[in-house]
Length: 348
Image (cartoon, rainbow, N blue to C red):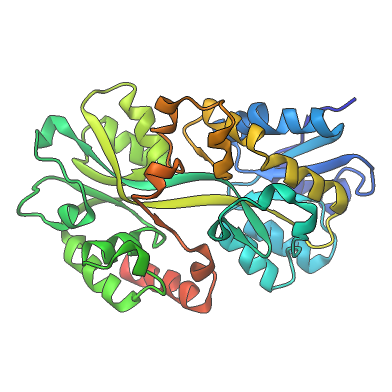
């Protein structure tokens, strides 16, 4: 028998300390960590429950919107209590290079074989995709709506209020695309050029949002005529308003990856689970529960995702072709870390 056991919230776990975790050596179980909320509920139904049943294992769950501090703590104390983490790939790459994340044995992960090389790192595999897209309010802009980041930056031809994310990831890339850099030529990022372009638009940005919920509220309330936002958040607002739209053109395709903590207490089971979690049939279930695209493109070939649904998903081949794949490996590099530090100064 398998069961899904929801562990205490991360704050409670930290209060318990490492000694309060489930027995690390129990067979046939893993501790899986994701980001909580509707997203974790959707993946539980689409992927985790079916994987547990298929493998005959117990999947204990925890949530950590920012997993990196705990990845570092567990790795540095050499007492990991987590097994598999769903987190931005930069965390997996950074953790792998610092000896905190396992190097994957892909001979034991056959479902990764057909995935594009860009969807994998030595330490992780793509799990789901979302996009930072250009969204707009047709009620205020009329027929003249922006379709590119150059349009977003063109305050004379496209007047209106603007909002951007208060974070360098995807924002620097959008600035470079607006300045004429082709998506295929983005990396390594020309950081100086990106910040020069951002300085041009900064006086016209009325809100620098800090959460997906805030970005959706700005659209819903009509406080932003144009905004960089996550496609899933925009889609949710579109269900309530015909005035809201977005384009995948020049979107920044982003993902979370699955990686395994170094010396994970259930390493063998964790590897088996990871392979199951990226299998095309289970991956195809996810977009039927939430507005995210499967990490494994083969999911589009199993017949579960209707064509009209695929057209709405960021990782569908036709939509992915219009976008730039954000390089979390670059963001995990010393240059990327320096760019993140510079962002804090830029926003002061």
